[in-house]
Image (cartoon, rainbow, N blue to C red; front, side, top):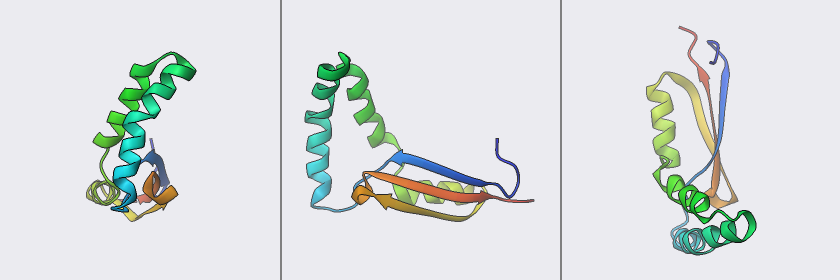
Length: 95
């Protein structure tokens, strides 16, 4: 629940926008993260799900568009670690 005029922040895994780094990060994500999850947490499936769910999350521009469409104003995002994660923010409309 966000009061009118309140500021929303969302920190999520996102899409690497660099066309050279993107495929390398995908290779790492699918071939390193799940086995690491099995080794560290004895739960490969949870980490496989994590990698797959990241790919289903809307890319940065699409999430920004959805926020604006939902009535948020001053919507922006900042990529961190070359887009591996992104912080989206916006203000809930007052009306």
